[in-house]
Length: 179
Image 1 (tube, helix red, strand yellow):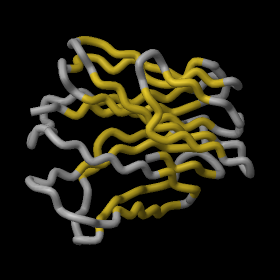
Image 2 (image 1 turned 90 degrees about the horizontal axis):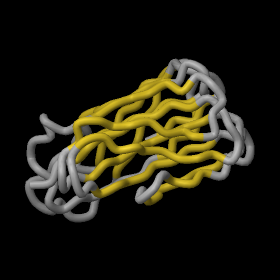
Image 3 (image 1 turned 90 degrees about the vertical axis):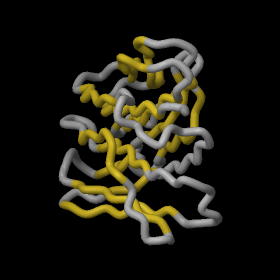
Image 4 (image 1 turned 30 degrees about the vertical axis):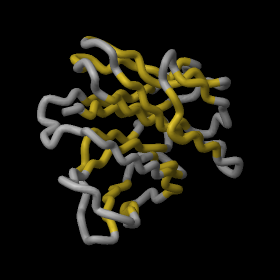
């Protein structure tokens, strides 16, 4: 999830579903230079819950547009205690809005979210990564992207996007372990 705000910091995000479940917050970061924040949330269901609606809620001083991408994964491990996660605050104006997620496990899924401010950039995912959702706000110029990569080995994986225009960005990533 990305919160694309008018200015940096000052927001809190929660996620719930129509059954009344509250999702657990994973890695998240509010950019110190980019007017965005990136968040990951998860909720484990032991069996298929049927149709439900997932809703993001935002409070704080600098509210913005929310980009929410919901993914249902069959075969995720019930415990994600050993899963890698990370955040990065890109405070300069690079075209490469990438960072490495380290200590990843084989046969896991890696998810990454990046938000940058006011660049109106075209975003190209890193090698082997696929876009889950890319959003460009024509009004503010803010960009948000969420992507996924299935791992084949262990170690470090470069995740993120190359932007057509450089801008400060924030980056958050979460590994989801497979059973």
